[in-house]
Length: 307
Image (cartoon, rainbow, N blue to C red; front, side, top):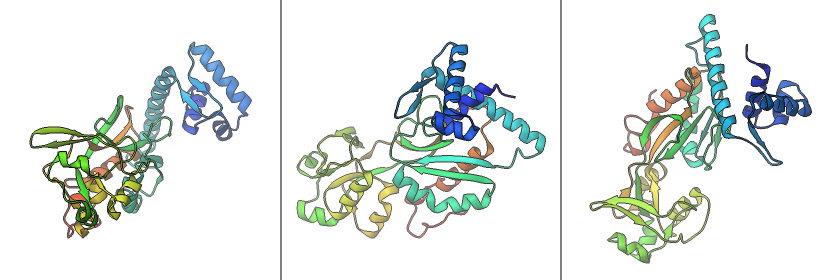
């Protein structure tokens, strides 16, 4: 049996605040605050930063939460072994994923996962913000990045090829660039934080810097601007492959692509015995995107994969 104050602390983190945790445990906010302070006094360390807007963990709090989650997972696994249910994925599973990717390449296949694992209570959150697993109370995050993040267990699911592209209407008006240097005279499109572009060509890595023709924090807006003929963008194949096949956009400077160090990962907090539900979902994604992800298959091969 866990120390009640440890269980209270884990609930505070999982629920994202004292009030929500108190409602779950049936304890008043005042008593929640008192017991958390008691735990901090006992440990001699501040665990939580308290502000009026949000709750965040201190480094000591992050370490304690990670250790306690591992202990809880081990206890759950021990109970599952005794009950004979250890091999059956079940219980709550919270996933976070980038907005466009989740909508296009996760959501359409979730019914297959749920049919295979009916005892899992699935939640999925889509956001283009960096998914902090502790802050978002996520069991698993899908990340498209060069580095999945320190201190995490990561499984590489697929490459993330990125190409330079534009709509035919834009190229008819402004001409087709024949070299990277030509891009200086063109209208470039990128969401905040996406430039400079880093591409690799025959002579090695090249950085393409500039100012987006339209400023926005939305990658989906950049996609729509590209399709409408507003400029040139560096887009992932998972995002633009259907438009390439239909001719809505065409690749330019095909000897230059985005750096191959960016890939698609499934990441989770390190724990000795992860719940079977997490393992089942990671395996599901791996089968879904391997050996060739759907967005890189031919038009004939596109469709629901056999899982």
